[in-house]
Image 1 (cartoon, rainbow, N blue to C red):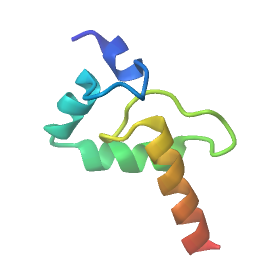
Image 2: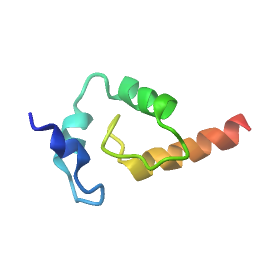
Image 3: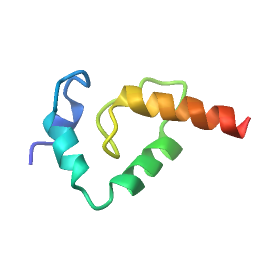
Image 4: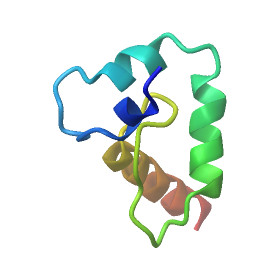
Length: 68
């Protein structure tokens, strides 16, 4: 599998990464890992946990509001 598909333009309609992540058995764990390890002050890249970077940014902002 070409891992570059996970770093394609996040605005793509039905990107291959979303189809792969959507049927992955560990997508929840992958998302948790991304949210716990990504630096909130830096730009996020690539699909993780069936979420595009912009979606993870939104989740992080909600988490930050809940934990504040």
